[in-house]
Length: 519
Image 1 (cartoon, helix red, strand yellow):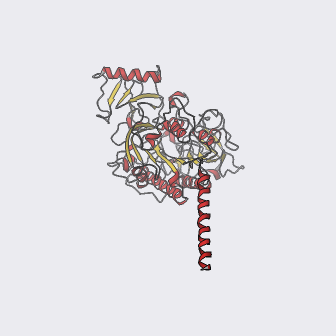
Image 2 (cartoon, helix red, strand yellow):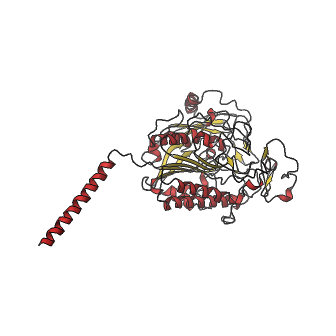
Image 3 (tube, one colour):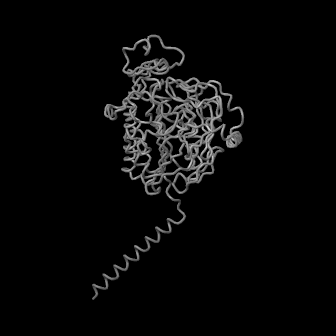
């Protein structure tokens, strides 16, 4: 009997102890802020609306992107702000329309930093809320203040506009300098072999694609026929830095590894990672593992390579136990282009594939395919699968994420569409200004209006319609997504309504562009 009494007292004591511990835990949790979600941007380069099988592609399969699209919010009216890269990336990080900055154009590899270091940026805002911030991949927003010494500390750059970690290429894969930059310093640089860069003239004794075609494994047009690196001719001239020069076929793996390591290094704190892939921008140089992965040549193969990279990156988040607390955005900086400076059979091997989907135009164009791109938001367990027709733009990521982390930072151009991004609302933008090489157009509801612009109507070397015309253009995208029927003359009332709303936002003088650049 005595033994039973002792056992009963022991059990009672354990129960009381467990109850006290539970009460202590509950009291501790009272008033605690919920765990901040990690935020990841996966940003493709020149990927078209029709390049993803979740968006209708039938000649190529992108299972990893599809998995995010089919288990997140897949937007059918998602836009980049511009039909070219630098402007879109500027808007992405600042929440400001690129046409407001006269220098927000396609930048050469030696351009100064486009973003003012005093400007509020997305990484700065998130950093102020306790996030560690990192960028891996393509930058193309300028570096330095005008004259860059590639052999010392390169600043200002990503680190000066809010990124605590940066591992980037300066501009594009087809431009010099062909080196990686690690937190402001060229990676693997031998100080005995300094780098020299010029966009004006070649350095004595350096072979170019024009003078030495026998050294090439890929042929470029005259613009892409300067300094040869890894058998690929580039835009611009470069000398030195042999140990630091990248291997093109290893670029995807290099950026992936850096992105994965960033996740592992910062898994115990909230982080924001901008993972900017280089595919399928030229030069298209898939790793040997992906050569022949499609019937479309290098362009198709690098899309498969990018999809694999995305899958491997998502797997890393899962392995580290982070996937259910990571909000992921997947998109592209602008629409597709096939022939963009190199002879890689992108047109000849296209087959039945439609990179633009059902839309007209492409990169550089004011027509829909220039800026309407794949646009996916994924958060495992938090976002229910959904197809959304809401009109959304990448410029809205700034204010929406500011709302998510309870910051009061916002901009005039960026709208808080967090509920739409999380799939809780179908309400998107009422209107949106679209840009292509300094020209602007206007979408409102189902309608889009393109003002008259001078310049070529077709980029014959690229096979893309620019959207230029000597007349106003008006299209009903719901009834005519391919923009075949210009309704400007038959519906003058609607045209005037669109012009008035556009000019209220844009101002006048927007039609004075004479000869925009398409480099």
